[in-house]
Length: 393
Figure 1 (cartoon, rainbow, N blue to C red):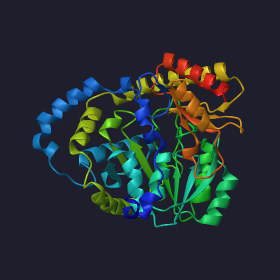
Figure 2: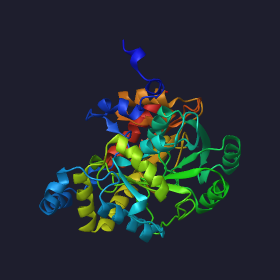
Figure 3: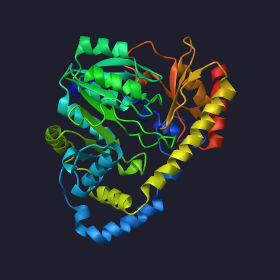
C-alpha cells in the first residue's frame, strides 16, 4: 500500500533475522542459543541500585537535563584512562565519544564516512548488525575469508589491491559470529598490509574483556596507532545491555565529524545512564566483577563444546572460542541450516542460521550458537534437541 513512499535505502536494507524471531524466543519452552545476550545473573543489580541512589543525591537536576553531544567529560576521561592503562594508548577524553550502544557507533561511522558504493572490507562472515546498517548507506562490501587464526592474508592483499577499501571493519577478539580470535602474527600481517593504504581500520571490541585465559593479552591491530584505527567499545557485555551505552575512540579530527553525525542522531546519549555507569565503575571492583563473568562463560562454553562432541561426533565442525559468547558450527555442505532451524524450533530449541552473516550467496550450512545466556543443564538439553532435529534432515 505504501511502497511508493519508502526510501530506496530502506527498501534495499534487509530485516535483522535475530529481531524478526524475538517474538518466537519469548516462548519459555524454547531453549534459545539465538540472541547474543549476556547472562542476567551477571548484571550487578544491587551495586547499580546503590549507584542510582548516590547519583540522584550527588548530581540532582544534572541527571535530567540536556548535555553535550560527546558525552559527560568524566566518563570520557575514565574510558581514556582505561585505554592508556590497558593498551598503552596516548589518548584523552578528546578522543572519546559516548554512544547509545555500539550499534549506534556503527551507524555513526556509516553517516560519517560512507558514500554510496564506497568499498568496505569486512570479515566473511561478520556481525549482521554492521551489515544491516552499511547496506542502508549503500556500501560495496569486500568480504575476506576468516580462518581459525584470523584473516586470509592472500585474499586480503588481493581485495585491498582491487577495491581500495575506505574502511576495514574487523572484530579481532572473540569474533561475532564465529568466536574466532586473530593470532598475534595475523594481527601484525593484517596491519602491515593496510598501514600504507588509504584504509581506516575499525576494530569492534565489544567482547574484548571476556577472555577465558587469565594470561590473555593481545594487542590491537596496529597496536596504539590512533591515526590509523577507530576503536569501538561497549558496557553492554560487562555491565548491562539495557543501559545502551557504548563508545568510540578515534583521532581528534575524526571525533569532530563524528560529533556532527551524533548531533543529527540523538543530540546525546542518556545522561542518567552515563552517570550511573561512571559511578558504578568508580565505586566497585569492576575487574573482580568481569572475572566472574569470564569464569561463568568459560564454563558454559566448555559445556556447549562437550555437548556438541557428545551428540554430533564428527558430523559437524565447530570453533572452540577463547572468550566471548559464541561458537560457530559448520554442517556438511549438503545440509541447510535454515531447514535445520525450522526443525529445531519444532523441538523447542533455537539458533541463528549463518546466512545473514554473509554478503555472498551459496553459504547455507553454517550456524551461530550463543552459550552465554543458558545454564549448563539447558545447554546440554538444547544441544540434544538440536541433534535430534539434525537427524531428521
